[in-house]
Length: 97
Image (cartoon, rainbow, N blue to C red; front, side):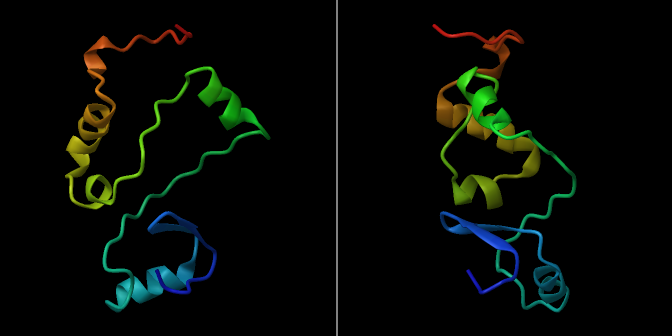
């Protein structure tokens, strides 16, 4: 990972809001692998942690191959497979067993 501005290392990847990376990508000198996502999500302090504790999220260990090598339309199913979960069996109701 290069010394990019506004970049947070997360394992072997970096999450960034940095314009310098976009400019480098435009000239072909940016990161070898890249995933661009646009949007906004915001949480109140402690909200995400609370949602995770209440089983509002399914989390999976980051997998570079899954992120960069699996086609976007197959990533959800691939992540669910890592968890050993069949998405057809999920309920909209969360709880604790």
